[in-house]
Length: 538
Ligand SMILES: *[C@@H]1O[C@H](CO)[C@@H](O)[C@H](O)[C@H]1NC(C)=O
Ligand SMILES: *[C@@H]1O[C@H](CO)[C@@H](O)[C@H](O)[C@H]1NC(C)=O
Image (cartoon, rainbow, N blue to C red; front, side, top):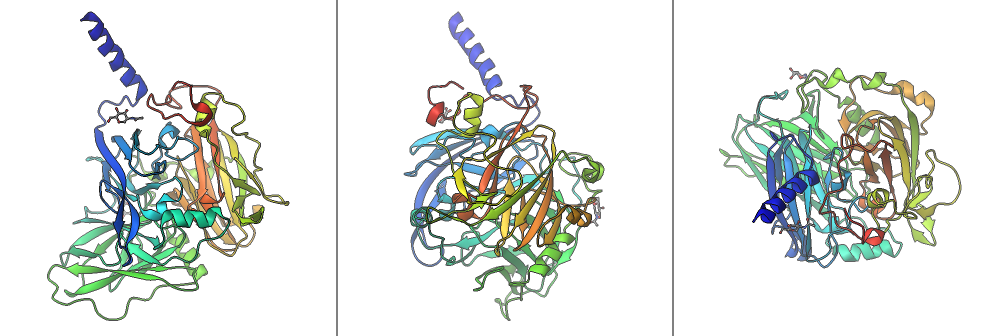
């Protein structure tokens, strides 16, 4: 009897230790998600898709700032699987990031319980599969983080809140697409666009009311333009930043990005077109949905509203108009602009140049000549268990150099509390979309041609947005500032999935020799082990 009590006590203490999110006031939310294959016809022909709890796209995660999420993911596919939480910062907790550099994939007929907190975040995010080429089959969904009750937001409460996941889509099975890539070929042009998993969907609201639309590009490779016939889009939020509330006719959204707009139903009662169309593509793909006024008797009519197609200057100019509202609250009750990012001394500058080399006759993508390859042992676990020969921190240079590209597991070392300038240099004629896990960063500048130190004169050091994914225009550069306040092993990757899959990614190891729970949580007690980490104990 006494043993049982003692055992329970030990288990209780272990449970607390294994999940050291000690803020008792922050609520816990529990989920069980089962991942299966299903057959749907999003573009009119039946194909295999990935469902979560039977849904395509997957269920929306509706949470509040600082919620603790306990999400048991059950993998019923025939392949190992992981979800990653795009834009969730995982403070001190890269253990839960759900990419192959931090987590062992969940084997078929097995499960893993993610435990993480939406610490100090508010806004619109997404999740999607990070393994194999699963993202091409679905498994993605929206994450809405609502503000806590007493934290004001810089706009009136909308009358409703719609999530639109837009993206390019292939009729081809994800395994066939992956086979094409793994055999060294590029993917063909996508077959179409989907809005929330469908070719025809309808959004319904009342005349005179104002709704929040959360738009995310969940596609594989194509930048999109979003617009609504007869209505303006008032931008309010970009990946957790509250913005200056400019009105736009249309907005570009690059792969992996999210934004929110307010739309007032202030037109005559009728149905209107919602349009997404491809950017920077020779052939323009278009998808429409219907905005339906509850008092409308008239179906959609008239030409689709025109959007930009190839205009690169237009897009860069629009990007520069998207700015931080310095007086608005963030998730915490302090003005966003109280952190003067433009006045902090840079610790280091890193310049990352993407390229599309052939390596051994096969198409690959590279960063500073290194085409990333995953290891069987997640880098984070190799680091934690001191397992040698998994990765090295001198595997990639921090500025571009000339010479042939090669395959390696590239990790850039950095110290906790460094303040980095990262320049993404794109010398290719295609658009890029770069994402960093574990952080949001200030996008301080966009420019054409080659970045030089003189380019710094054009930076916006006052009210740039913070976000987690930044576009880099063809033959252009984009600079970000990032404050390395989150210890861990963090994936920096192309959000363009063919490029990510074939090597355009790396890891940023944010480290300090002082091991402290204040900087990083313990390895979770349920951590899956694989590769050379098998036989170790979390
Ligand atoms: C799998 O799910 C069970 C509950 O059904 C849970 O106890 C267990 O911790 C989960 N496994 C992992 C590795 O999280
Ligand atoms: C910025 O936020 C403040 C505070 O909520 C709000 O009053 C103001 O209208 C916003 N400014 C702009 C330009 O959007």
